[in-house]
Amino acid sequence: MKPRLLITTAILIVSCGISVQAQLDLPVKVIGNTSYYYYEVQNKETLYGIANKVGVTTDDILRYNPTASQNLEKKQLLFFPVSDFHAGNRQNSGVSAQVENAFNKTDESTIQITDNKPTTYTLQAGDNIYTVAKRFNVTVEGLLQSNRTLSPSQYVEGTTVRLTPNTALPFYCETSSTKFYQYKVQDGDSFHSIARSHNTTPEALQAANPDLKKPKKGKYMIVPRTITERKLVEMRTVSVAELQNFYSSRIEEIYEQMQADRHNSEINLGIILPFQLHKSTPPRQAMLYTDFYKGFLLAVDSVRGATGKHINLRVYDTQHNLNVTDSILQLPELQNMDMIVAPSEPQQLARINVFGQNNGVNVFNCFSTKNEDYQSNPYVYQVNAPTHIMMDRVLRWYDNQFSDYQVIFLEDGDAADKEIYDDIKKHISELGQFSTTLKVTGDLSFDVVSNHMNPGSKYVFIPSSSNKNLLKKVLKALKQAKTDRFDCDIAMLGYPEYVMYLKDYQTDLQDIDTFVFSRFFNSKGFRTRDIEALYSKWFNGSMLTSVPNMTLFGFDTGMYLLKALGERGIIDADTPLHKGIQTSFKFVRDSEGAGFVNQAIDVIHFSTDHKITTYVQ
Figure 1 (cartoon, rainbow, N blue to C red):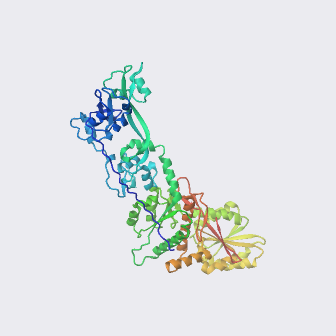
Figure 2: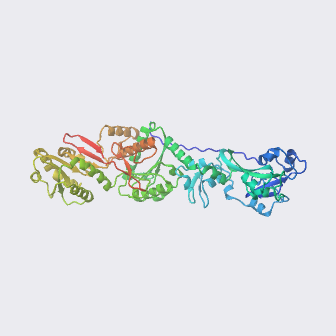
């Protein structure tokens, strides 16, 4: 089966009918900062009669005035929250001008969004996750699910979120409402004592009993009580404050659980590379990127069943154009990526790295060795280890391999690898190893080499650069020394570039017993042949020749990301070493607040028995 892009998009569209309650033609009183319609019971009135007269149901009366079921007294006040009833025509209702203006003022948080098409919204001053949920009639969980890279604390002014309006199903929430009870005044009661025992305020008591100057023993008075209930509600019926009160203590836990669930169920990967498919004949670099992608696809097809997760792979062509790159980075789905594979082009890479840092999205820098964003951007994964990190790993290995050897440096004056060579010389000096230097101008002679060797000693030869001409100048003499000076143990330490010279010099390196360090190496064994066969079968051709081989690089990268994200959901210092066909991966955070750097360095041993063995450090 050929690789496929597995993209899942689910949109839940729900239509909810809204019931319209009766309008009330009643005066309004403010109690505890909440406006209530109120009705004064007349002599011998019944619940049924009041309901018909006022325009509500008996259930409405009892919902807000529970003790009205027990008895009704003349001049008893019945209250109905204004927010739960339409104001209607209140010309003769006795509503104050202040309350009237409050009704006419439009509250932006309750603006009705009538459609349910997916959209984006940029938070304004004063917005948070609860105001957005209320305004667009979406659940808090729905917002978190649609914007999985945003933590609840990141819903601040300037943040753009994705949402689908009017998709909030009824949900359980703790809501607070005020209900009015009758209380028979006891001896010694006061407004303060009654308020204290009923969890209300003296001011609220006086507002609910305007004709009562002070409590009188044996008389009934109205007591407002705030009741908190956990019940099934609709978004339109709850306030922003109620949402915040209900969710504030648990929203981080909800978010973390969603993150864990997502990691357990899917892998989201993005590849943003300049394939330049708009050109009839793309340049070679674009074709190499395409081969990387093909290798990645082979990895996806190889492991998609084994991960136990749904793989969402999205691929974008930047066309080697910064404007196109910027347009791609505006796509909402990129904020949900577990990892984005970025190109080597400095400006494009820099833009993607900034996007990753701003949106909490990890960026896999596979191709650039010079970019240093990993030093300050915690979301960057630097695949090609910087020289100083590579040499730190190599020199640790050197200490185990050659600490009891004498060193013979082979210098030709080429400064191409001065940084690496200086690191090696400094380290050997600090170790206190005996060393000598041979100047190489023409071909190195066996006699010159032999004159610097003592019987029974061990020698490691280290060229001063990876220059191919220097290697050519010293090979003959070192091969003869390996053969004729059998009284000595001889080896050579080579450079990463030597892997590109194998076509001409592999046998020579083996005859000398050479160790080469590199960020990548392909021994061209059976695993390579398997990928070559799959490539030919699926893509009807042969992999492009390059060092490193880009198809294998794509395959190794894909296998590592899918395996690591499939098993643990994250990539960090605890993620096990992955030995690829050509490239290995082991990431460690560079420093606190910095990104991750690949610490896996290959040491390849070209041994005299003509075997090639790779050790990953």
